[in-house]
Image: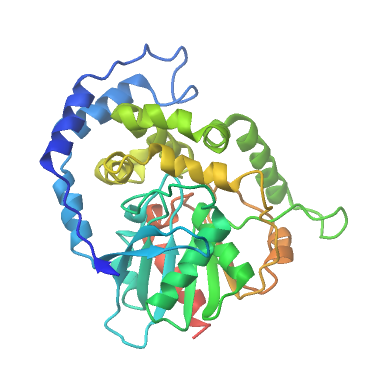
Length: 372
């Protein structure tokens, strides 16, 4: 295990600006708004700011103000991957260790505004997924959800934590659920913002309320008209990677579109997340060249083992109204058999720690305090 600091060469930042200046823009969409994707005028405005107004060194300093480390983890396989992680210990030596896992198109940037408040209560460990952020890229196949979960248990053991809890959203929810299924020594409970569970057999749960029926219908809409990114990344991650690594405007819009679609933003992502923070997150894909490696997690994890195994550890769930999957509580309870904490919030979406940081921190504190 070794200490890590972010130190991006100026040449990389100069290259980014030069590439942005040479962007070959398409014509505008044939309809107004975001129906066909990121509108041309906003894409040009955002990329112009990225080139001439955005300050990466500010984000770099923010990351470097936190203790960062790299360690090789094998996840139970034959090859090891160097994993980057933040490790912010609480001033309270008896604090409960908390493992936070991000997803796509997120990064540890998702947690920058909550790590401080959380570290008042927890020792916070926030790793970058393999092939994401400043973690290394796997060079062989096999790094799917279950292997990452095993690697995370290895990480907590290596840090000397014999009693800990875990939380996550997006892939972080799925990986945290896999941890809960395996229930490694030391794991006391998990918290999720996007629990995934199968549809129960007919008649095995109470009839759905109108609100639950609407939420289930939203899932069908998501699969048909909002999940093209997933189909591409789960089948041809290498192909999409060529464009994402070569063109900063492509990488930026590929990500920012999801912050429009998946946040409770009333039509514009910057209504809930600042322009600088959006670009901070994009930079953790652009600078390390993670377009293909981050997409590959979909290829590794889709079409294989179903994410329906029972999760017996104590579980807390916080559902936000603009989350991608808002399953009925009765479905969640069938998979997460020790559901001890369940709340439904009035505002917020998929990126809970960025959109509603105070609520997110309060929810983790309230649930995990019961497991001490």
